[in-house]
Image (cartoon, rainbow, N blue to C red; front, top):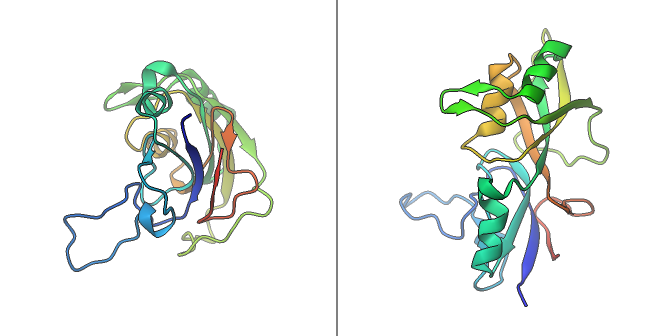
Length: 182
């Protein structure tokens, strides 16, 4: 039986268990939060992103979760600079041209700020002259920093990025920095 762990990864934590190559500087890693042997992250979540990270001890399951060929939907809550118009939302829904090619179409909708959202440390930068808004964005691939690049490409830089779900797994009921078995 495979073990599957759902972690609500905090901002600033590396999606790996060790931090080799930065001797002398202590960056937080998964080992600061999960003390379970022989589980590994199924995919990555950038250090400056938060939210759901699935860990498993099953290599085949890990591949099915992380590989874009399986088109597993990943939903993000994205705080962006500005308020997107219908053209920007349509561009996200149709696919965005990035330097590494067109993205697959995404589900993209404006949303209210999530209820009971934990504070981010450090807080996002706020500009009084520029409003911000929230998107619910679902993609089925997982290119490097894809959501951030998609939002920037339609004129709305990402201020905060939280992965809410992967397939049927979600961070619902998980405080930041905590985990549970799926």
